[in-house]
Length: 323
View 1 (cartoon, rainbow, N blue to C red):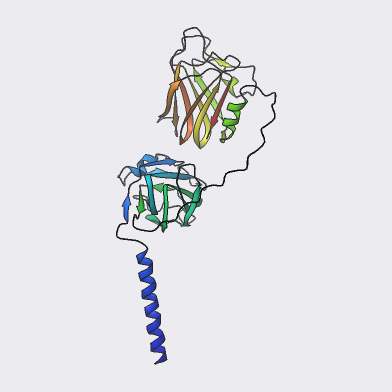
View 2 (cartoon, rainbow, N blue to C red):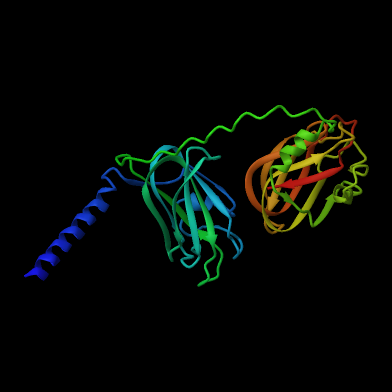
């Protein structure tokens, strides 16, 4: 009789717990497509095109630390994210973490962490109020030893669930004003560049530009130059030696500050054959800075599309690639 009573009580407890867990997700919960996806993976648009036969991919088997960020479009009660691996079911990450933020710069709240799953990797958690979701790989898949691929992404939201809120970051204590120094006027742009990871240039080629190796010789007195003011169509191409995240290209024209291109474009490629334009705009005095959405690439090409004033050449003393 005692055993029957104990078993009966246990069954009631399990039923109650099951009801409690199910109640966390309300009838208003639903799956939505991201408004936008950015990050380290190649061809990320493929993960949000409603086609399971296309994919975003890490492009390599060692993808620990790579991440992507999903924009839901507005603040929502976010309860999860699913990675459908589509035709590549074994390309799940070994392990990953999911964070939620109110802005693309954070602050971030850890929502979930665990292993990827064959076919579809699902992360479900109690609702967090936010707009952005960041997914970061924390371990490779040691069973299948393949790259990380995503055919489609789906975000779970639940307007009816009470959501946790992300604490606002504490404001840093005011710091004393820095003492004046004797740095050159271009020290501020250098500091801006140094906030990003420098990408080493393994090799460099050009067309229509002479002495191109001067941009990587660490000598501020040598330069690569077109030697002529009619240089539209000239280009510089760098090989980073591997696939890296790239988000900024800086041409240093000083000490010939007026030798900047009238207009130029920046293209990137993973294989040197298929190119993607990431920036188009006008050159700038002293240094021309092209900043764009982070993208994975091995090759970067800068092409002059218009002369400046038909009097000055296009010259580059230093070329900096940042990611």
